[in-house]
Length: 286
Image 1 (cartoon, rainbow, N blue to C red):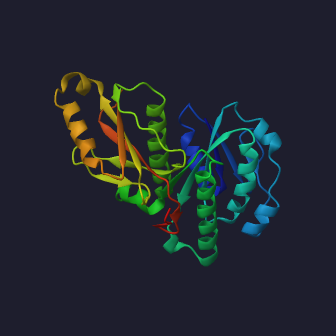
Image 2: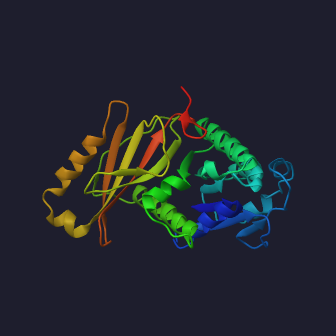
Image 3: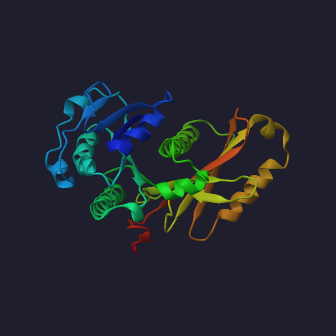
């Protein structure tokens, strides 16, 4: 898969994927030098100016890896994100697009940043829900911080970016590798908005990376040590009981169990909603 980051935040998260060989990472931002994997965007004074003066990227995109899919990463508060729809339009001519939208802490944004974030956040969800994009994953910096616990000032964003890329990466790996056992769960055509989260396999505590409303589907990915899969006779019953406890009338739940060589067992999950998430954390009736 190709990873394309727009703006400072988007480029930083894209860089955090570069440690995994499954991805080809590309960066778009003002102030970059043109290389095979970076493309400078001329600096503009406003969100609107970036939209009107977005550069043509046909040549740069034509040089990208011949993959069918792109994960496009951005945060909405920066002025450069005014170029996002133009960039996505050009990417869409060649790739199936998945969007990763990083929601900043709105309480810390100034008026202009707040409005820029609100515009991008809403419009990109509308495009995803209508099927222009394959999906949009929403994550929130404050909620990722809650997952991490105490995070020092130096390296704050590096740690959040590493958490985000590692969880998304493992979910992608589990989606594309054979499981030990799984239950299937098909998403409805219009269910394209989602977030991700972690599950404490012992306590059952779930932590979402975004406070998603009207969740219709959840899929849990259990990464279990091979020796536990071979020797723990109670494990499968515990997993089934745990997942059964998460199901509700309005939520469809599925799971898959995967053998790993890691030292600890872990669980990640994806939660999906058919509903546009209203700024900042409310939802439209559908």
